[in-house]
Length: 624
Image (tube, rainbow, N blue to C red):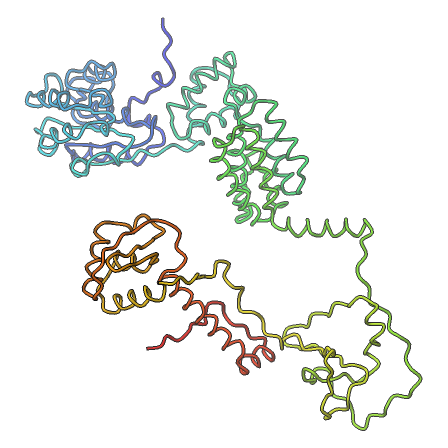
């Protein structure tokens, strides 16, 4: 006897046997019990979630005759009558399944609709089930619209698709739509346990957990993987064998990676990545497992009471959540998600995995500060000495002048005033021989005192300056430059005909004789040569040299009194009206900035309050 795969052997035969689609089962059961039946149903969802199964159960519910042959429409088909058994075996004459993936033309749909005029032969209703209905052509959809909208009372349509976005809205509006959801891994794991118990196959919970996650919401995929795992494990489902079959990464490697990332241990990260490569484990699976663990860590960090005591890995994940800050966990989770998309771009999958892991270290919060501190410490150990303060000369024996009034506090000194102690100033000879000491930075809102020369005149006296004297100036007295000159400042190399061409073009523009492309041609062009009846122009862009633009420019020149023929060549331009206008605008901008920077009030605001001019806020006033 041939072996029947688990996905077919354990296909649900009634609504009560369906798993993970309670919302669909409840709606259909209530509709069948209340006899509120729609003429067209559309079931959507990913592969292996039960679309075809639901349509077959619905067909049995509509045509079930009961064990005694006197049954009616019911939400619990008996499964033993002639209609139920024939539908399960696929030979019920009033139940037709059409695969739209291979029968997508208008002829196939028309052949199906021709059967709609005949009443059921055996059952109570005719049921047309069209699988993957989104594969039908536009003409096929149009052919079935009328029948789908107003079918005979004995005809029911059941449509199934994995991509409802491709189904025309005219079809969607005629159907009652149900979305079958992907199943949770826990639901799949629980159902697999019941199936394997019925099959008398020993299975470890860890192996079932791996199969439930690998199915990705599809029960058919889960049962198919279970068949493969039973064959791979020789009749048993053990976690190491299932992990090897799926190519899944052991959670111990993931825990080791996250622990090394939390500690900033790059050596352990690289060694663990090499271990994954040696064992041939999937790099994508490693990042996927890391994402799942980081997600659980983030949940525990936000809600500590969300820990699952029944999970063996819960204690390890909780310890990792305590060792890693919450913001770092979020960052690692995001980088793992983006890293999975980059694996296919790299020439080597494992090299890409290593780079993603190293990126997690590089973007670790505080990594830059630690690196700076490490460099500074290494420099100190290497004997790099910081500059020291030069020694002060010995104080002279001359008595200090007696102050007739108490000296003001340092905070009340104005910029440019001398300190109370004249011995603070170093001799000129020593200052010339010793390196200058960096001036300490003043806190916000304070001004550094200025040290005057030793032979400074008394207060109130006019200072006597010589040509070579250098005086200290408060730091904030010097205006900060607004911004550096633009690297590509406009420039013009004047030509003999440049002034003439500038006046001609300005006149045409002012009179609005040229617009759009013709105006750009005139502004961007350079007058290379001219004689009595011909002018030669030159432009840099070929797109400006259009026949229509040249003709319109010629007509505008003739209207302005220049009856000449023009020709245009493409080449380097050094003098054009556009360049001259750009240079003039740049000069006006520079002049406006200099006016603001040299304004006494602006300088005073910068000096006393540390004001700064917002870059780009200075605009020249255009003359009207």
